Length: 219
Image 1 (cartoon, rainbow, N blue to C red):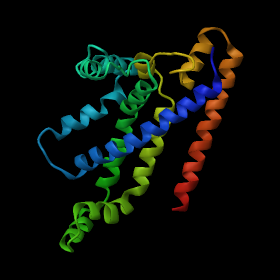
Image 2 (image 1 turned 90 degrees about the vertical axis):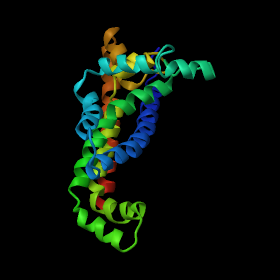
Image 3 (image 1 turned 90 degrees about the horizontal axis):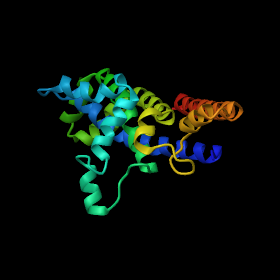
Image 4 (image 1 turned 180 degrees about the horizontal axis):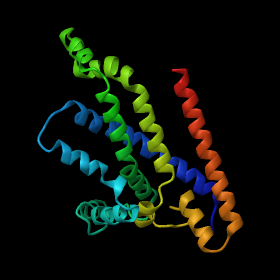
């Protein structure tokens, strides 16, 4: 039986955890693509962009091949721990990370490429390390673009459906996020419940986005 508040809290928890991971990984990848020049850079960019253009169910299928008990990574996790991420809340996080990561990478790369590298070079000549230069020079100049990436990534993670269904399943009280709960209510003909869930998720999403935008406008 669908528990709207459990599904909402799970969706928010999954989105928050996924956004933290995506922010760190996406910023690092975006920085590398924006500042480094290496063979195959366009291919790397294409690989990280792929989840944006593939159907989520296709991405979910690939994730099953990676994290399933017989997957190329999942088989080792199972052999070493006797545990599989399939059909767990952790699987929902994995799906949300993979689907939201391209947005963070793209926005981060665009934001960093808009920063004049001369400022970074000046910082290096003053003896600043790459870490100091990034946090004291690059980040303050590109933070609005990075914040946009974080917001978009959170929204994408909160609304993730297809890959989550494939990897985590739709288990009420365990892995049923709000999009999955809405899908189940619609499929079972519970239109009133589906409408209530839609409104609840919409209001929550608007509230989060409004708060984030207000927070960004004050900085």
